[in-house]
Amino acid sequence: MTKSTQTPNTIQTRLTKLLGIQHPIVMGGMTGVGTPELAAAVSNAGGLGLFAIHNAGSPEQGRVWIRKCRALCAQGKPFGVNLTILPSMGPPPPYMEYAKVIVEEGVTIVETAGSSPKPFIQYFQKHGLITIHKCVTIRHALSAERYGVDIISLDGSECAGHPGEDDIGNFVLQAKGAQ
Picture 1 (cartoon, helix red, strand yellow):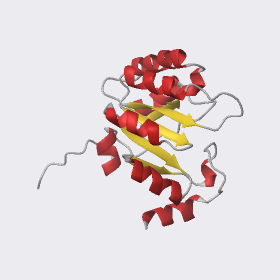
Picture 2 (cartoon, helix red, strand yellow):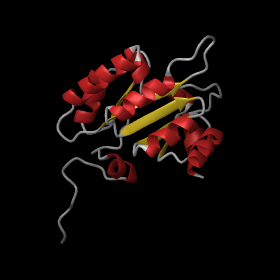
Picture 3 (cartoon, rainbow, N blue to C red):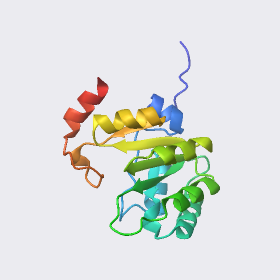
């Protein structure tokens, strides 16, 4: 009999191995409520905690949040940062400045959501980050795959808070995604 390489109460999948987590649970960025404290709690429990960097209010405050999350995470527990790219009526938020802070602070996992992540995926991958893109349709997932994202997160309309207007339920979306 061979000894298991799994520690008690862990589930190994391609996702857990790639992200260095114990459980295949990834917290969404959660605009408005995602904080370093919540992300660190999820990471410390063995999942991947994320927070939306724009919740911090500015790129420099985002830097403070990243440092806070890192300090709250136990040694070796990964966390990630979400960059949600949304259309804007006025001048757009400083997305590239947020992206630069994510890279400068040594974040290793980033999730993008919203509008096309193409320029951000290229930037993050050039700097060695693992990239996740949150998609609400198969069409968007295929585009993100062409852009080279490492992980696709397919989110049905029940997920709430995700950018998207197609209202495709999770059971339908996951079944189509598996094809």
